[in-house]
Amino acid sequence: MTGVTTPGEPTPDDATVLLRVEGTLARATLNRPRTINALDHAMVRVLADALTSWEKDEGVSVVLLDGAGERGLCAGGDIRAIRASAVNGDRQAADFWRDEYHLNARIARCPKPYVALMDGVVMGGGVGVSAHGGVRVVTERSKVGMPETTIGFVPDVGGTFLLSRAPGETGTHLALTGTPIGAADAVYTGMADHYVPSERLPDLVAALTRAGTEAEVTEAVGRFAEIVPAAPLEARRRWIDACYSADTAEEIVARLRDHGDPEAAQAAETIVAKSPTAVKTTLAALRRARALDTLEEVLEQEYRVSTAALAWPDLAEGIRAQVIDKDRNPRWSPATLAEVDDADVDRAFDPAPDGPVGLAEPVAVTDGTGGAR
Image (cartoon, rainbow, N blue to C red; front, side):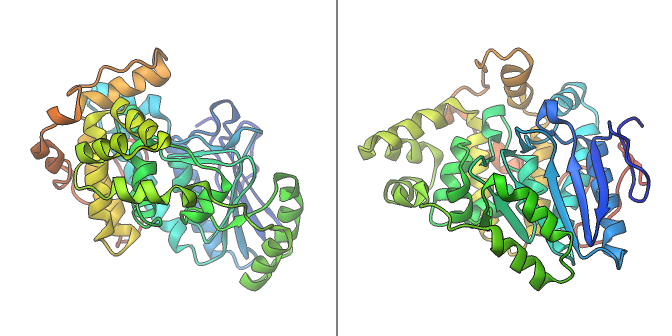
């Protein structure tokens, strides 16, 4: 397949993931800069194979992920392909998510330091391949977010695990509004660890090629990191916590409108413009995720919701409005929060038709057609 490579082979310039080992550093670069390195199924399989190889390679001490181009690490999954799968009623999206969620869990369990350079745009699936790593670096250019409600979908790739554990109700605010955040808020909410100015990243990478131990990785990052600026979200906690602690999406919107803070009022209008089904299901997913102990359990829940969303009219419609026709005028069905049946939200958490992902079991990567490789 054009653009696909495997560890140990020369990497062609047009590969969608560039793989190489530099000193003790194994480096994977997402290489679709025209789409801000959006992830497709082939890229997920390449990254999974690379991790398998590098985990066993005694010459590799550190794994690093970054993105090609100047715009960002990764803008998310290939949502055009997801829409096509939803419209066609096939298994392509479900198979992609199954392998992607396995990859997210493997990144979190990586036995070697996994360094993610979260420079520029890091959205959706980009969060999944970075924010579960052990060393997460943001810069002054970072724009991190889970914008799924904008396209009639629900945060996945472990996003509900991360956001449900953010301080107070900040994660609920970010999930329902889809608001992207900068470096300071990414560190504050627990989605990143270190702030390194982008001009220092080449020197950091060079230092990591000589890092042989976890302590040396920590020392290298600390050498280039700076004190993170104050987090804007922390200053907004008064209205965020007061409003988003409500039991229902409708009450959250009412509290935001009545609070008196202009930013709270704007958040309310942002939420009501999103897919009502996605908003209510996202809120339920976050609340349920808080009660789950592990990332793997949350990813299993997300798989149930993601596969259920394929049947929602809002997923295909949201992607159409954002990236196909780009009219930014989705016609949601149901059109309002009040019209969304709570029973339909609950059904999104029913077991997936094809069973659980099996994240506690050995990882089996599919070939993209539903069969195991």
